Image (cartoon, rainbow, N blue to C red; front, side, top):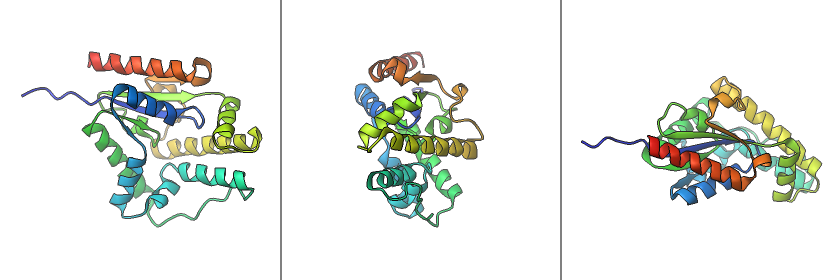
Length: 213
């Protein structure tokens, strides 16, 4: 019976504005593997029997927050307003989403960005865990340009708030620090290295891991 080889999986954790989704999609295309983002949300919602917007409000507690902050900053409403929580308990949501992520990683070669995947899959063979980071100023500039916010100062409010929420998310679910390099195989400062060079480094590491496994 042929030996089963673990799937090639790249799990990317990232600071907001550090290019996680951009690099994730490029890596998936370059390697010819799946990119999972919205599909995780859809499947989690389906299993819980709720709508996708309800899950999006709370899954990492920052995804729905991000949308609300951007909308608030763009139109001049209160950027700190958070929509009321839905009935699904946090524990049920996170457990369901964790199983969805683990199931995808067991089934196919893929890139997964965010949602705690780098920690959830840390003991799974074949997983390359990556953390992307950059300075607050650099990320704020990118967010301001990407979401057409009026000023960099407004973008910085958003970036600092999301950083705080992600830090709390990791502490609450994993009892660990989100930015602790010991939990990743690669930590890249995309501001200093550049997005293109960072892509090349991750690709090289993923291909090397595939050869050596």
